Image 1 (cartoon, one colour):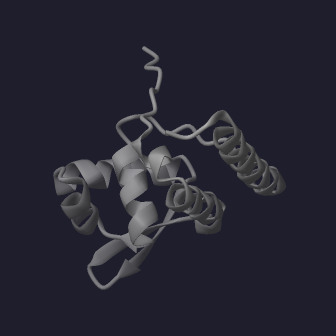
Image 2: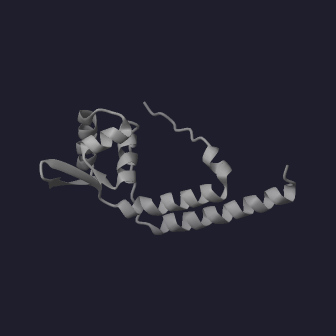
Length: 128
């Protein structure tokens, strides 16, 4: 068991890292994105893949191709995505992929340095 001094040092280190992340986020263009629970798995899969068709994303999310196609087209209408035609396929990609990569990198660094952070669960409020 760690003593109070070691815990205090660890907390200070975490706070310094969080301040650094906060500074990076504040330096990014202010874009407010609200993604509904229905779009979230699609959005996360597309962030991980970089780009993809509805079929490719459906294999990642485990949902039907038609459902993913509908989500992708709605997200494009919202201005989150662009699409390109490649042969017979429509390939979707994020308009601003760098906006999310900096935040993800810092989050992964924090989890690597403090493995217990990976076990934290986040509770999201559902708004009806």
